[in-house]
Amino acid sequence: MKTLKLIVVGIVLFLANNIQAQVSVNINLGSPPQWGPVGYSGVRYYYLPDVEAYYDVNTSMFIYFGGGTWIHRTYLPYRYRNYDLYNGYKVVMSDYHGNTPYIHFKDYKIKYAKGYRGHPQKSIGMKPSKGNFNSKIKAKGNSKGKSNKNN
Image (cartoon, rainbow, N blue to C red):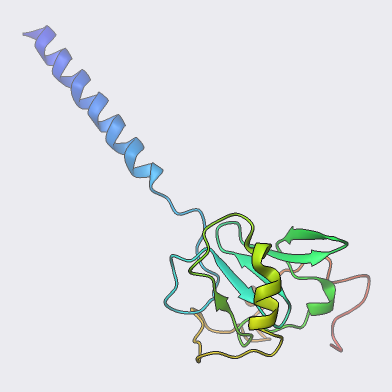
């Protein structure tokens, strides 16, 4: 009888461990940024025509061309330090699922030129206010030893 109880407890512990492992496997790698367009939670890439860059939702990185190569960074280049991601248009790349969205860059650059505006978009979150310290976006490389107060 004691052996039977030990076997049952062992089976229960084994099953509980397997169920817990299965639950933890189903975690999303990335979630859309607050400035991303509403209604596209399953999309991996956005193309940003105004800055000719891509945004990878899974890695939370921007992809842009510089120095003869495609660069992956958590921030845009310094020249776009004042670019408003909330008001800029995002082309949702629902038809692309690979790892190199820039493979069709020439086509996107022509089809979605700088200043392109398609249908109206609403952002997932609210645009942070300037007075809210917690809402300021960290952007590496944006200081260059200068103050951004006058920008």
